[in-house]
Image 1: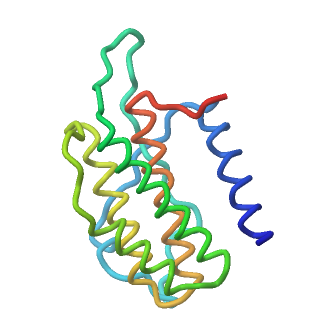
Image 2 (image 1 turned 60 degrees about the horizontal axis):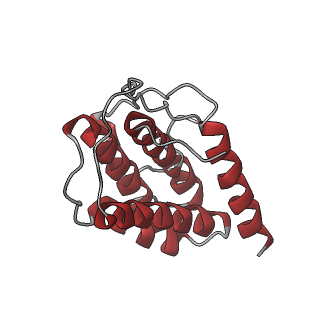
Image 3 (image 1 turned 45 degrees about the horizontal axis):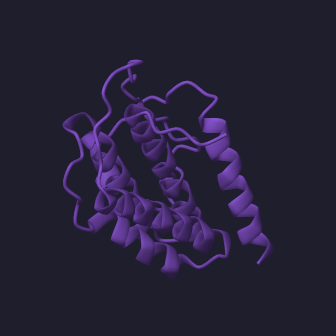
Length: 161
């Protein structure tokens, strides 16, 4: 239970910090990303940040309905499940949540300019799903959040302060 409190606090701190930092850069997508991460070939220790398109002040933001918002909240819940499971040493639960994140039905209404974040998030989740051990799953999972943050920055959605 203590680890869940830690991750909850860490997530809240990250969300608050995201609002104070410049947008991240796009993580490169390469052919190796489609292969499961193996112990013999560890992924880079620090994933490349996601690049976001700057939101111009005064620019009209797209309007999203409740279905879209619920779908995005489901993404956040699955990312939490992955992180909590990896923190608890439960690779099977992390893989199950990553499977959903990688393969679930896409919600309608995501602007074309944001699709790269969805694609990169799904590819990172697929690497968690295909991980052969906890360490490789943790390394693969580190690439998910930068994609979420980049998309949020492109959408002009920042953590509340």
